[in-house]
Image (tube, rainbow, N blue to C red; front, side, top):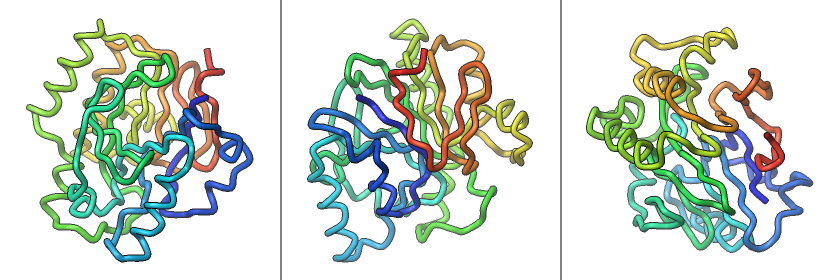
Length: 226
C-alpha cells in the first residue's frame, strides 16, 4: 500500500491517522513537502527522527519551502529503488527532486522545493541555500528531463510540493513571477503521461479533474486511483 498526504510541518499527531496506523511492513507513506521534522538539529529532534525511522513502513517525503535545508543536507545520500535518496534514519528518507523511484510496482517521479511566499515563515537556514531549493538551476532541471526521457516520459504518479502554475491559478492561488519550479512543472505537465499528480503546498484537500490532487491533512491510497 502507498499512502500520500500533504504538508505535516512537524506535527507528530498526523501519524495517528487511522489509515496511516493501518500500514504494515513494506508499505509506504509519502509526504508532499514541508515535512518539518528536520529543523534545529536538537537532541529532541534526533530522537523523534529515530522513532519515525523505526516504523515498520517507509516514511518518504519531498522537501517543501519551509524546511531547514542546511540541516537536511547534512544527511548522507544513497540509491534506493532506482533513485537517489537522503537517508534520515532507518525507513525515513527524503526523495530527492528530479528522481524516479520504483515503489511497490509503481513508477513515481518526485520533485520537491519551490516558493514559500504563500504562507510566510522563513526556514532557519542560509538564504542562499533556501534560494537554491526555490530556484533550481538549469543543470538540475535538465537532469530531471533526462531521467524522464529514459522512461519515455511515462510514470504512474507524480509527487511534488508545488503544483504546475496553471493548476495553482485554477485554484485561485498566488503565483510568483519567479516561480521556477511551478513553471518547470507546468511545462512537464504537457509532455508527461501519468495517472495522478499529488501536491501539498496550498493546504487544501481538493481534486482538480481529472488527474491533479491538492492534499493537506487527507490521506489517500494512491494505488486505488485510476
